[in-house]
Amino acid sequence: MFYWIMKRLFIGPLVTVLFRPWVKGLDNIPAEGGAILASNHLSFADSIFMPVAVDRPVVFLAKSEYFTGSGLKGRLTATFFRLTNQLPMDRSGGAASANSLGAGERILSQGQLLGIYPEGTRSPDGRLYRGKLGVAKLALATGVPVVPIAMIGTDKVQPIGKTVPNIRRVGMIVGEPLDFSRYAGMSEDRFVQRSVADEIMYAIMRLSGQEYVDVYAATVKAELAARKHAARHPQKKAGGAADAGAGSAPDGA
Image 1 (tube, rainbow, N blue to C red):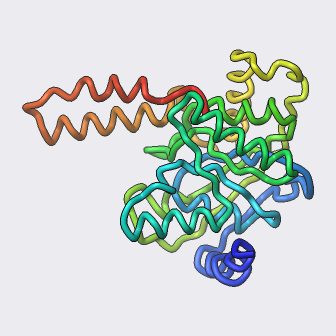
Image 2 (cartoon, helix red, strand yellow):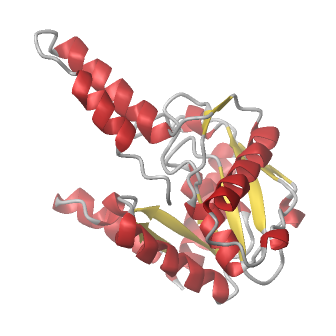
């Protein structure tokens, strides 16, 4: 109920008036049944613009940090995410990530739409990065179609680190659903998972026109953070931070 009230009476009208979003290919989203909406991730605002544009409710797998913040801001953020159909996604790998994907499987088995950002985090520079395997695991385990989506211009509305958004037009392009039924019975094959994830990212790249980089966005973010640290503290060696970051991005969800 809260989801529909916010969408129809508050967020939806506000977004429409201020940002005048345009959408192409909306009819590629199935009218019923489970489906994965796999999108590029340029801005925190992506999780607002996409659900407003899609007629059906969208449940998102959001990073778990949004649900564990401290202080008033942290509690308000966690409450907002829970009330707007978002589930915590643990990206640490192992059993924690598997449990998060299990929650996604349940959503899809109930015939709902599940939104996921295969890159695992926002792009640090507007380019499209390598997809993690979580989206492939979900698609192969459930057999539902994957709908590739490109968010356009949302990084200009709310760049990383900016709290107050810029008022400008944004867009969304929805591609044709991808069917991976040819891989039935091969859901545990790591090479198949990688092939599926890469195919999804290629479809997103075709829609978005972004430059593709075959590394994880989390790795690039860690390297950028290490460089900033080194620039601020030139007397300290920060080389180890980049190495740790490169290994901390699990090839999972």
